[in-house]
Image 1 (tube, one colour):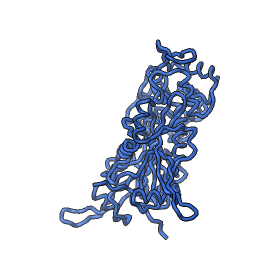
Image 2 (cartoon, helix red, strand yellow; image 1 turned 90 degrees about the vertical axis):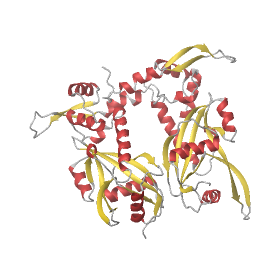
Image 3 (cartoon, one colour; image 1 turned 45 degrees about the vertical axis):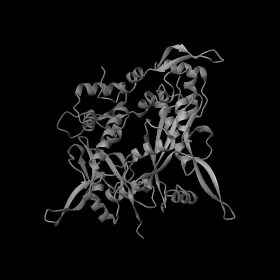
Image 4 (cartoon, rainbow over the protein chains, first blue to last red; image 1 turned 120 degrees about the vertical axis):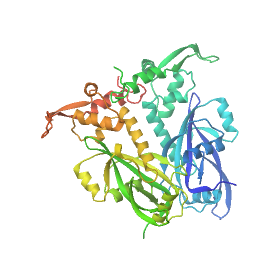
Length: 252
Length: 252
């Protein structure tokens, strides 16, 4: 028996990845019918975030994991609740028509509980998601998304850039070993700014959070750059545990 | 015309306050009918978080502010989204009956979008909320709440204690001027632990975040304690702006 879908509640997932150069977001295709001035309809395709209405008997988080896997083949990622999108007019009449037709609803509105995630992009993951026709798009080049998904993406990106300045999330997007150039590319991609190379290098190496490895890039045209890894222990010791507002983990 | 309520989506608000000694949460009364073994029903009363289903044509956040004001008289507080509570079995059969009867629904499940807030408690606010029969209960003495509201309260409390160790939220709950004793009481109430007086005093004064005022307690039996205020500028300078992961606001 096919589970019944809830016509009032959906989930949408913003999954960010980084390929060493640019910030990516995982998108899926949507087919829809566009009405023409002469009353005819034409089949069109656009892209959207992976997402769908939840089942009637399903927890929202379980639903997000299930839908992400069904639509993109991606599992074993950590999805975090971003925000509820609930403007009663968030979905225009045409898209509401698409929604009701696709899912057999007669709803006037649906709220979306948005989740987001950061994954280490690899050729393996890319071929894995491609099996479901899900694609990783450059965030900076995403012009338009179906429904209100552009707004959801922008909210997730804003959250990502705030976190980047305060938490060591960069290292969740980078491979275990990375070059300073890759780290800088990531900062520039998320913040949408250019950063001075020498200043960046000086600051990030001075932080004490990076550990040099006895290994350099291979098979590159330019001078091979050194690899580094994130020293989480050094970070934790310096920040969270040392917070002057923290009276639980005192380190005298 | 009375707006139609959405049978699938509700909001609940966890509003914390601090009276100088203990941590409080704002609760409202709920009347319900309890079935007896002989089939009769008896009217009962218990307490719950301020909350209700949203209107069909309403944004979730607007709904949270409206419902909080309608049920507790409280406005001009900042409500932040805490988490969605969406276990399909989160509400038992009896409470589902109460819900359907109260709001004229025939729903099998409802999700709750929980909000939380921190307010500076004052006699004025207490008398204001009392006009709607809303009451400030000691968090530590809350045994049972209607529906799954105890679980929502505990989640909010956990969030509050995590924040307390990492962000200067204590000063949103304290009056503008406060004693070290009051600050320590607040930490102890939120964390549910006892903290050594001398250590606390030494650590918090050593942080540089507190500014002594030329003023002491009045009309107290014990030796009047000195008042302090939070120096947000010193805090910002030392933490956020100086994050070693922050490449936007560089301060060389």
